Image (cartoon, rainbow, N blue to C red):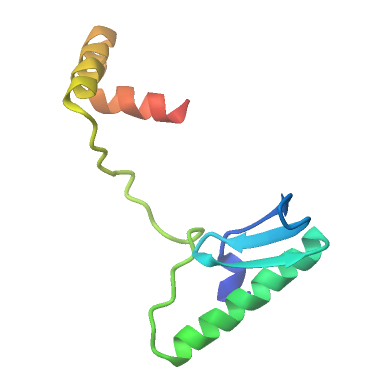
Length: 108
């Protein structure tokens, strides 16, 4: 399996272009238009493979595929003080931590 097979590809219909557009999440600036979803996917996969080859040849850091990347489960979110207070009150009333309340709300 090639490394580029592990990237996250998406194909959707573009009403503006009247064609299918394929993208790669790890290479947000790249896209490929085609008349069928299969051709769009094939096109973006080729573009990504060429881009990765160029980056490697130039000694650049190639993005890690999200499918194999490790995630810690932690990220920081800044909210207005009043929202922080409201959420803290909701958590206290529910008898759970603020972290558990926020995680539950994000999962909905």
